[in-house]
Length: 85
Image (cartoon, rainbow, N blue to C red; front, side, top):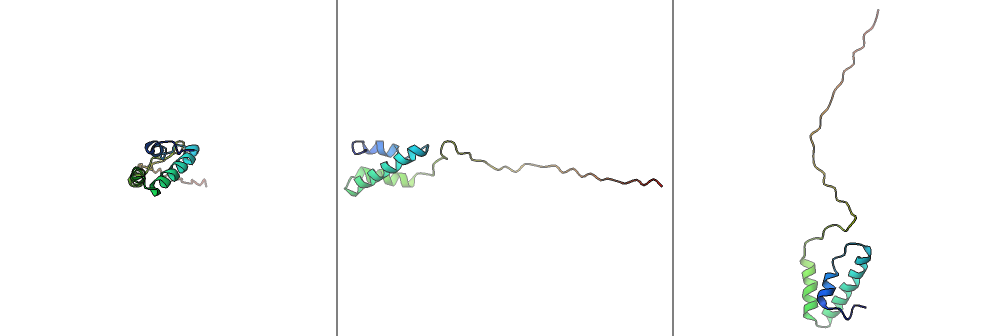
């Protein structure tokens, strides 16, 4: 399927943004690994580059929440009972 694509094209597919692209990324990684095992130095270099890249941003659709400490106010109410009698 991806035997005719260049090493760089396969490398660019290693950065998925959704589930279907993640499946293509797995196939691209497998093809690069096959090429590297057969002596392709460029494929080996691109796989090493992928290993040292910083962690990717979350996939599209995922929400990342940052918890920021906010100042809060406490209100204390006191009730007094008044007895008639």
